[in-house]
Image (cartoon, rainbow, N blue to C red; front, side):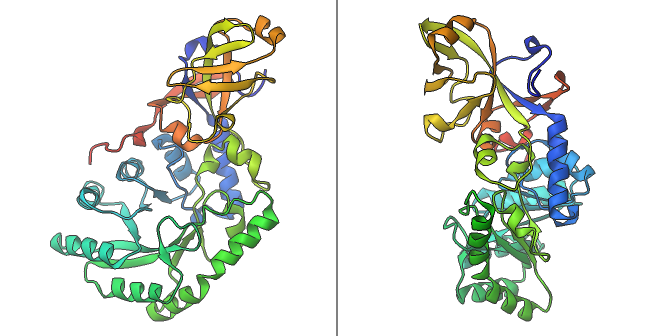
Length: 370
């Protein structure tokens, strides 16, 4: 049997998310080994959104985590994690939700991102009204062009402004370079180094002004193995814990194992050469072109022709079509695992081919309690 096959697939509904526990644990160990120590890691939880995975990371010595939503932050804090960066600019009601988190989880330190004076001002006023100080990280744009302050002299002005505000505490600098996706390591390193060096003069000036080395959180999964070579930065890989087809085929030098699949079944054989599976775009991420959505591990030659909400239409040869029976089980490796996980309420946990547990994807919700 292949590593992914279940001894009794009849125990699992389809389509359904599968987590392979041993592989998740192996990936966490690899993250720690690559980083050199668990203290350097600030892994993003957006990929798995699951408290049991956070607990395994805590057991490995990881104590800091990164997230994108208030729900993810609540999920992490609920495991007892001591430190959480909400890597997002908080606006509107999410500011009050941040303070509600702080009240509910007093033993967890929460921080968030600032890239504009207006964001800083609003959070400052809210903090003062609560008689609290809020830890913030300066979000720096070194090429992603999504959020973050430009790498120019006005970044120093933003630091000075934040430092002058009574309700804010400067926590450090956040630099995300998700735009760097060169497949070959040396090219990826050259691009990451070039973009990181744009920030260095400003980091030096911030350090001079504040009188200490600020905490610098840098990179994501693609650039993880590059930034490990910088001894004074913290690293925030995310996808590595589950890994997917998109990253697994693209980046060399990353020794991670696929640890999450979708189980699917044949529901129809409408015409010769065509089979239909119960895997539509409500069960697997569909933001990419049809050829980059899933890979069926136990069907070697096929073509995914189309997907609708609950159906996937596949073309196979006439001989293969004859051999396939309605109800046959296939195992799909997602091209993009992060939004795929977010489509499922729970993951069925697999060990040695057996179903051993169900883990709820707690933070797929935009709101848990706060």
